[in-house]
Image (cartoon, rainbow, N blue to C red; front, side):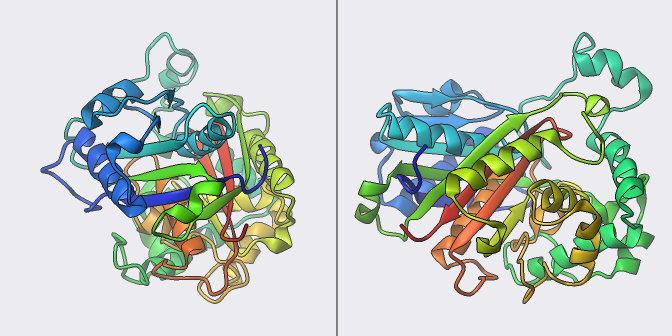
Length: 379
């Protein structure tokens, strides 16, 4: 894919975020879609490409009343939407469609019309992990995290600091679920969920959604809001079983997707003004900083504990508050993308002054998949 040939011209989340007990999951898809379409100044009939995850593309397209000529139902967990952006950009460049809508919605808290998630007993997870009690993200992620801490010398206090800093960003965001300041002591004294994770190191459980609209860069000037250009993209997958990661102290999928995006974008780490790293649990920003090449893994915990990612720091990270404090309906990648777009438009609640390049990095499953999108507001 060529740099800066595709732009995001519409972006919006659902009208409400948090607990939405009177709206079904497919209605949340429609709400997000209509908000993004209004943001772009378009009509539903202008959409000729469509992508979504969990819900099938045909179900949501039918509900919206659109007839796309290109669809993508890639569903690899929370970073599915990063992959959708990458695939949509390629499809637009190839002339398969002109205007792509990407939607995400989940009734993660209220469970209204939510698509059931099941682990089949004959699946790899069902055969080789589930019988041993490895059942939920909170019981899966500790497997690599404890190795990561031992190998790289990461402390409990450093991982706790991730949650503290995210809350600082959330306090600046009126839409954030959790805004009350917390300390490292608060995190380490909160209820234990699965060692080493305490509840303040685990993601929120909420309802909501979001949508993006992409088109070719040469059309970007025809839309009412500032376009955000796609500078580089990357994707990869590793394993559906956390126990079978190539190495527990690094993510192979991260180490493929991130460098692909940086290479395509033609940038170095020093060029990055703003960073989003999917944070379903507090360890993920540490893995991301290391595997994306910002610094050796041994330095990641000290880097965050020293305040470099907090407001006013040299590498603003997860500026919406992240999955730990902003919101997390189950597949967080769409919300990270939304914040990158807001930062590049210059309209984020906690805006990074003069930001020109934003890296948005996602994870799917327990390091099962990864997607990286690099945005810019300059062409």
